Length: 182
Image (cartoon, rainbow, N blue to C red; front, side, top):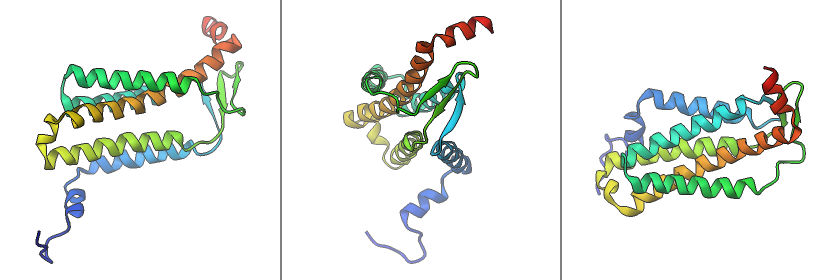
């Protein structure tokens, strides 16, 4: 492979040809994940927003790689389910509290949401670049099943983290009575 001094390296070419909105999404996700590095209070309904949004982004990633392939969708779902089961077994941090009167959680700061968001984003980006450079990857079994499974794993962790919080609220009994009163 020859390198001509006037040609930018391939990585630079890739970045130059990346649509500007992709960088905006990156900044938004980094900001959202960064906000979760510090202890926070979050509302009961807001707990669902991020898992739903990230599951949608990961599902879009699966569809962009494999279309409506039943195997890819099954791989995504199986990986998500496996991670939901595994994460649900882990206890919440001891500092996590639910304030039934305010319908808010007190949660410790963590890098996990940031890592998950960046994982989904970078997977989507790398897969997109890989397919643009090597469209034949779409037909390779390891790629066609591995990528959806990775997206499913991210989705499963997000979903289970939210489910653990909802389980805490439900255990207080106030979530149900508060929902009836609303």
